[in-house]
Length: 200
Image 1: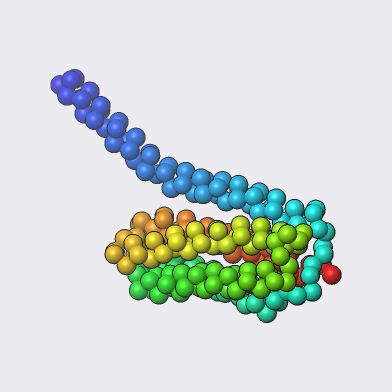
Image 2: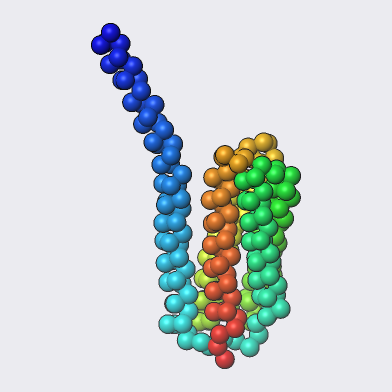
């Protein structure tokens, strides 16, 4: 009888451990995500501060302010649609998730198209060998890379969601991707005035 009891308890311990791991894992995932975003914040802070250290607040006269403002609006709207997609899948509203995530992906790639237009104009007005041009291409290039990776991650989430993945009890990938997208949008909110508004 003792052996049976010991065996029963022995079998119970792994189950308890698995439960503890299951409860701990989401917290660990979120901690890892926030640490990653913190490290990315330092990266962007270094590039942004470099713009002021190297060139002060100087900026060229020929800046496409309308296009820059348009790109800012596109990213802000995409952040709203991404949030709506995250909330939708968390409440098992797959149709709204697919619609809002599709809008977010389209806006993300639309932003990249606008950046390509800006690059073509920048090559003429302030080439890369100029001080402002160097700062411009480094900051916009760094941010565009993050937009591209974020848009690809959102596209993956959209494709998986279309296949029936994710739901109210399993939406971590969507949550993490959307939080990363919010960070990318917030980074642009700082980059936009740094390159286009601040200066003389």
